[in-house]
Image (tube, rainbow, N blue to C red; front, side, top):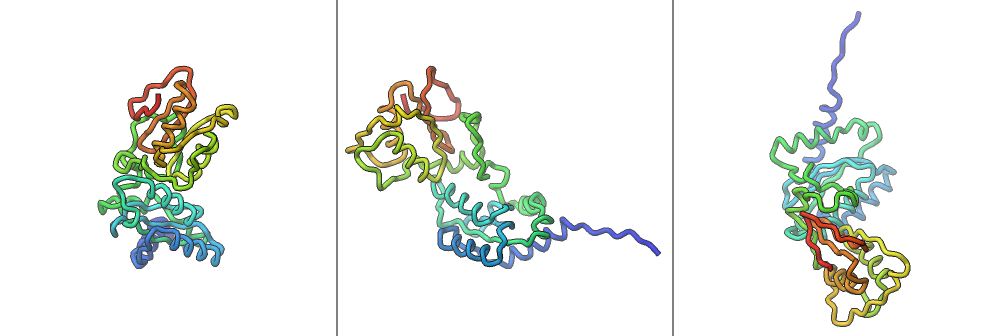
Length: 245
């Protein structure tokens, strides 16, 4: 005759995903394994799925992405430029999902599962890949940035002794594993830097650039990034270190 069928699809899919993740071995988060993942995605013509980050074998972050390899590359870049963290201790597991399963996969249920076990402590702690935006400069940093602040001594090996400020900032922005936010006009960008005897660390280079540009340029180091702006009046931040002037 008739009946009512009840089926909790989100929880059923979550349970299946957790079983599959548990059966996978972790792969070190590095360029070799990310390249293998990229090839795997291309071979199956599927990019979306879920992934798990582990630190020394312990789950620390669970996520869902439209392109899993691309998201893991973002995480790898971010983690490689942090203090108090050994990038070699980070591994990942990834499940690439067909369209129907990707839609049914519930990220919140996955997070809750690991949270109940006292794991995935990076979730909802400011670790995500999004830029918080200029308007949030100086806000109290999240747990992740406080625990693992940027490595201000990140080294650049191919910076010449003489280089225009604009070129230096462009190189640094492209190569740094964390955010450098700045604005510079064409005239200021042409100022020539003499870097003879200057250490090639991120902070030393930026301080030298700010000094070359002048006293109206404010260089700030936050837990998650650097900023360099020309200001008529310097801004005061409760969370951040002013490096120049």
